[in-house]
Amino acid sequence: MMLRTPLPALNDAEGSEVPEFIHPVVDAHVHVFPEDLFRAIWKWFDEFGWPVRYQMSSEEILNFLLSRRVNHVVAFQYAHKPGISRELNHYMAGLCKTFPGKVTGMATVFPGEEGAADILEEAFKSGLKGVKLHAHVQCFDMNSKEMELIYDICSSRGKPLVMHAGREPKSPGYSCDPYQICNAEKLERVLEEFPALNVCVPHLGADEFLAYKYLIEKYDNLWLDTAMAVTDYLPGENPVPLAELRSDRIMYGSDFPNIPYAWDRELKELAKNFQQDKILKQILGGNAINFFSLNVPHSK
Figure 1 (spheres, rainbow, N blue to C red):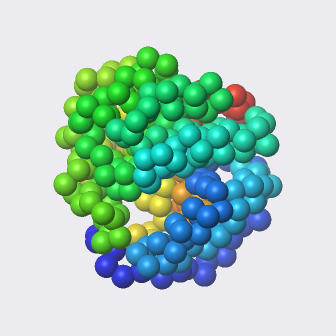
Figure 2 (cartoon, rainbow, N blue to C red):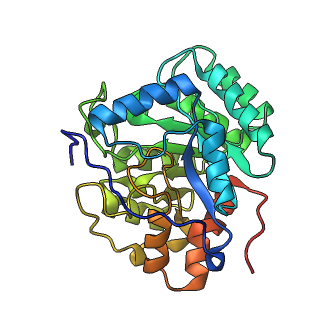
C-alpha cells in the first residue's frame, strides 16, 4: 500500500448538510493547525499523498462542518518536532473557546520532549480533553519509556488517547518506516499494561484490519475510527466487512480537511452500510460521545 506517487483527487459531488435522520453526528477526526503549519502539511500532501480539496483556515474548517449540521467536532493537532507543543495546545484551546460547546480539542506533545508531563498538565487545565499522537510523523516506539509517561498521565487523569498506530498509509515522505514501529502486537501490550487507558486507533487500524477487529472484541479500552478507511479511495482492501466489527467501538471520523474527495463521502458510505438505525447512530455519534465524554445529547 506504499504511496509511491500522489493519488488523484476525486471530483465527487458533496451534499449540502447532514441528513436529519442520522443526527446527532460527531466528527471525531478533524485536523486544525496554525496557517503556516497547514501550508507545510498541504505541500507535503501534494508531494506524497493526494491533493487536499479543502484548504481552509482552522476557523473556516469548523464553521464549514458545523454549518452543515455536524453537531460536534473533535479537533486534532500533532507536534512534528520537540518544542512546539505548548504553542499548539494554546492555539487549540483558543479555538475551543471560539466555538463553545461545539468543538472538543485534543492536546499534543512530542514523546520524549523535555517537560512533556507539564505540557500535558497545562493543556488539560486549559480545557483540552485528551491527547493526539501520530506515530508516522513523530516516529515513536509505542512500548518505550517516553510513551509510558504519556499513558500514565492519560490513565490517571481519565483522558482518552487517539494514536495513529496503524502501519498505513506508508509513504517515503516519512522519516521512519511505519512497519518498523507500528503493529497491533505493540498496541496490545499497551492495552494490557494500561487497562484504565482508553485508546482510539484511527483508520480502522489500516492495514491490520483483521488484527484490530480481534483487539476491539478482546479489549473494552480500545476504539477505532473510520477516517478514510471506508471511502473506497486508498489502495488496498479491507477483508473485514464493516457489519462484522464491534459496533460500540467504532467512531465516525472524516479526516477533514486533508481529504481529496467530498466532505460527506464517508457519511454516505456509512449510512449505506448500516441500515439499522441504532447501530448507525452509535457509529456516527453515540460512541464518540462516550469515548470523549462529550456533552452532546444522544438522539432518541
